Image 1 (cartoon, one colour):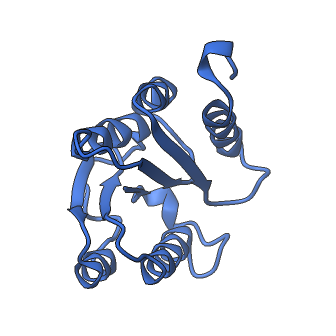
Image 2 (cartoon, one colour):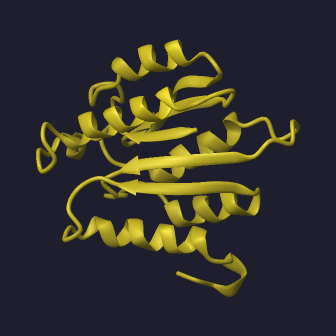
Image 3 (cartoon, one colour):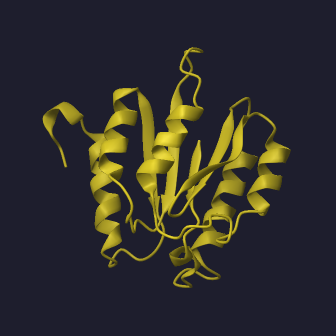
Length: 160
């Protein structure tokens, strides 16, 4: 499941042409390399919405990807936790296959407790990977580093 930040801050041009277009290019390249894998997409800003239900239809995935823009979500903000929660609801945990989320964001979480949502996902054996968009000097990148550290180390040890 791809969770893509579509907040206005993703239009920053520190990565030409902007963060969102670079993220979409990376997702397109990922889709090109999928074989027999299922993919879904969630877009989020102040709220989260399913853009593409989980599918193996890669042509549809690319079609939906091309329509993504910052005007899709009426409420601005960055609700990473809500996106993760919606991603968890989108999975079929009965089929026994591995589950993964790729969160692509500039990390400016304003709306909810994203760390608690990551812990919930990890507790359900869902791999959560975060790709930060922007420069390493930006304060929100520290938030992304915290999440990546959290998911790469056992939560029982209290790593944050």
